[in-house]
Length: 172
Image (cartoon, rainbow, N blue to C red; front, side):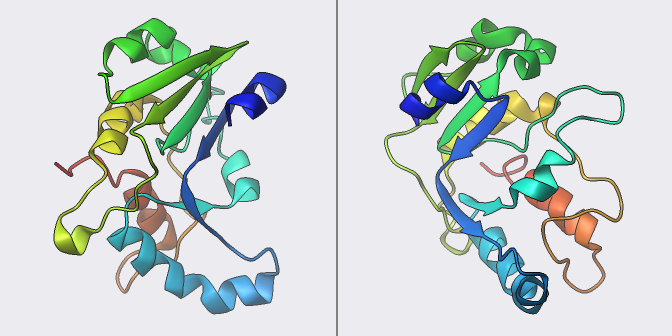
C-alpha cells in the first residue's frame, strides 16, 4: 500500500479485510442481506463499494469526508484540515501505529496485522477504534435513501449503514 499511495496520492483509501459486493445488481440484491450480520459481528470487516462511497465523499456543504478507519488508512491533507492536519492526528496515536507521509497525505497502519474482531467474544480491534475516534469529525454520513447495507427489521438501510460507519464509537 505504501507504494500505491506514493504513486496515486489518494484523497482517501483503506486496506484490510473486506467484503466486496457484487457489481451485478440482481446478485447484489439477492445476497445483500447476508452482509450486514457479518460486518456487524466482525467490526474490522470492511464493506467495499467504491461507486456508492465516492458519491458521498463530499458533504452537502462540499467538505471532504472519509468512510472511516481500517488497518491501513490513507487520508489526503485536504481531508485532515478540519481536525488540524497530519500533526494533530499523529499526536493522538501511540507506538502501536506506524505512519508514512506521502505527497498530499498520510498513510497510517493500525497495529501489526489486519483484524476482524468478533463482537460475540468481545474481541474488538482496539487500534481501529483509537484511530476512528480521532477521525470521527471527518467521517461521512449517508443521507436517507442511500446505503451500503440492508437494515434489519425496523431499521432503514440508511440507518444500518450509518450505524455501521459508527461501529467503533461506543466500543471499548
